Length: 275
Length: 196
Image (cartoon, rainbow over all chains, first blue to last red):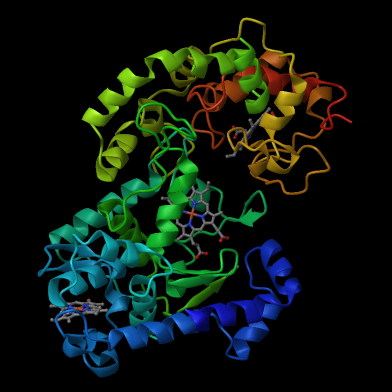
């Protein structure tokens, strides 16, 4: 924890950096590029933390390394093919859900333990984000190669494509409105990327300066739903606003699969760095 | 009555809207009981939220996104126009200050993001944090546009332009007819920063 904060504050200390980052559009400001070249990337401390956690025994004495090898050797390249279908859990999983499944199924962590789940879900917790960042980094330099072999993978991909273009909610939005139709335009001051054409998945999980946080694609996708103003009965900012899909739900993983497949052939380079 | 007036002033919404929560107060306990009985899980809530998609949104959910499929454009527009409800006091409201807040920059006191016009439009030259998704509304009131047209556009933009990226703010109840009328007043007022 301390390590992360230190890195972040060192970077943000030069207020100018944050200022530039806040108005930057598509590209990283040169300050950040220079810091990257110096090897100062706040995302790396999450990877380091994930590596430590990877080798730490869980409640039943097993660590991730017990099954996946010292330094995760057996997981090299795995992230390039995710999300995919897993027989042991009977569903398509993204990196977040896969880690959760391994911890609860194979390491003695309890899915019904609310305290554990809260810690797992939290962006600043010791499990999900650091482990996802570390496991993803084991595929650095590899090309994304998502295949749709299993019928569940095909079904989820179709669902993802449908959701991408689905106009819904009190603002009539869809992912496609902001990211396909309006790509390149500016919503307030934020430039709108095209995650499909630009193969942005190559740089996720990513550290975001704006929020001073490391995000997995789960976090990114779920947050974008907030713009829709979804509701159960009648949209109301205070009383009836369905902000995000539940974590690790099909709605999120389907969209991830849709975007990751579009990024096939792109070279993984994580953690990414965004404003 | 005093209570209601204070509530109205605090919420900055005017009497009409402020009356509603007060009137509902007597019924509140009953509602809570029914709400508790069928407390929905997060999964159920999200599922319902997606199922709330209306047939017009569905028609716009094709890869082109901006052209309806399965409904002819003229019928689409006519049906959308039929949803537009007009306020009793006419399409030009009296509370220009409220209109400005709703048009809104949060920094200028419009805390709510309901209107959020600046996300897509520029307007008041003082506000540089504005998007370029829709056309600039600078000088809008000087173009001789009928305020009724402005009202319809904000209430239900799909009555003018099916599948537009501009949300149907009145149709969905994000803004009330009276609130939209105040935005119209702000946009057409010669003294509005939009038109100066």
